[in-house]
Length: 204
Image (cartoon, rainbow, N blue to C red; front, side):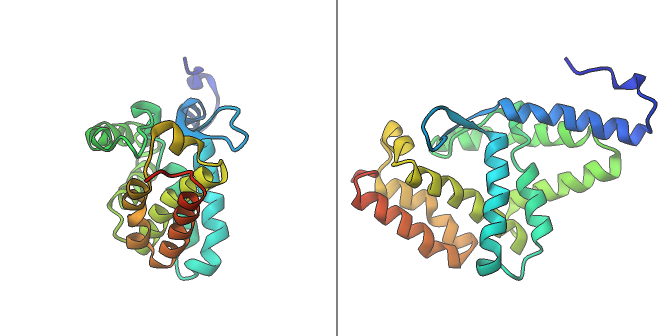
């Protein structure tokens, strides 16, 4: 249950921003398929979003010097907030990913609607921009959103792949969008997948 913000002697706009922030903090409790590298537990969607932002910062200088990095980082910070309502659906559950789309759009409207109107509308547009993947910033962000879990699965000795019986062809197909979104990251993704296959992390 959220605390009563109405008792605080603060501007209404700040009250709505605090309400949004407290509500969004629930993302720290949304479990994901991905594992921590020490395999002690699954990661949360909030941890994923933080590491995505760090991944974008690390890769942008070499791979995307022309993008507006602040926009990319904002997209990555907000793109999974809808999981507060809709939960996380792993990429390998492809039909479920299609089915959850409507619930995610409803969640976006609800969550960003908690903010002051102009600010909420701006973030909703940015969330939709990420989903549509038409601008350079959105396409780079979407590529980063795919390559970060791939890197962690590889670095975690394929524990997630093994648990779900993921094949090398399945992984290649699901990760092919990395090159579509951001061509210079395609060979990087392919190198991770090929090495994982060679080392037995991904089966035939």
